[in-house]
Length: 197
Image (tube, rainbow, N blue to C red; front, side, top):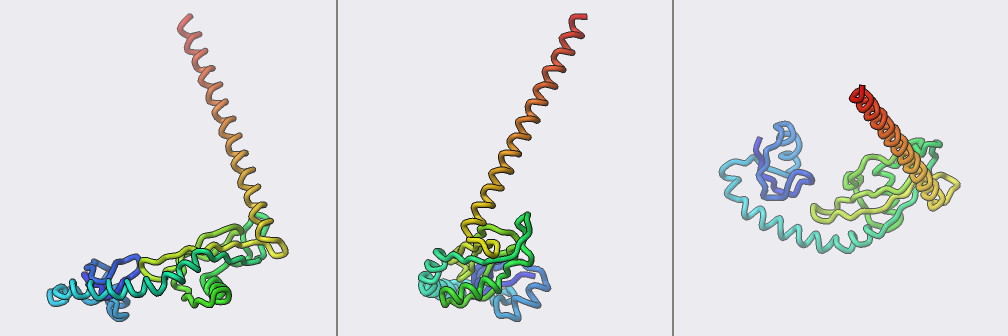
C-alpha cells in the first residue's frame, strides 16, 4: 500500500513523503492515527503544501526543544541495582524507569516511547537516545552500578575486567600464532626432507 505521510513518522519518513508500507501497518496504524493518507492522485497534488506546513512546524518545534535537548545531552542518571558476579542485573532498567528519573531530575516530561533502547540488563555505562523531534535526538548517559557501591567503583571494576579479558584474548592469539608458525616450520622441514631423499 502506498501512503502519503501527513506528519513525521520516526524510522519511516517526513511529512510529504510517499512511502510503500505493509497493508496492515497503513490501514491499522498510520491512517487511523492521522499520520498518513492513501497516496491517491488527489492527495499527491497536496504534497508541496503538506511539506511546507510540516517544515514550518518542525522549525518552530526544533527551536522550542533545542534548550531541552542541550540540558538532556549533559544529563547523567545513576541507578543502584542488584547484579550477579558476571554483571547481569537481577531485573532490568526500563524506559519507564528512565523517563521517571528524567522527570525527577530535570522536570522535563518524556514519554517512555520516546526513549529508543532495549531495557538495560548489565552493569556499566549506557547511552540512551531520546527522540524529542525527528531532528533532535539527544543522548543521555545511564550508569547502572551495584547497590552499596559508588558508580565509579563499579565502572572501574568493569574496566579492569575488560582489560583482563583483552589481555587474555591477546595472549591466546599469540599462542595460536606461535603454534601455527611451529606447524609451518615442521611442514617445511618435512618437505625439505622428502626432497633430499
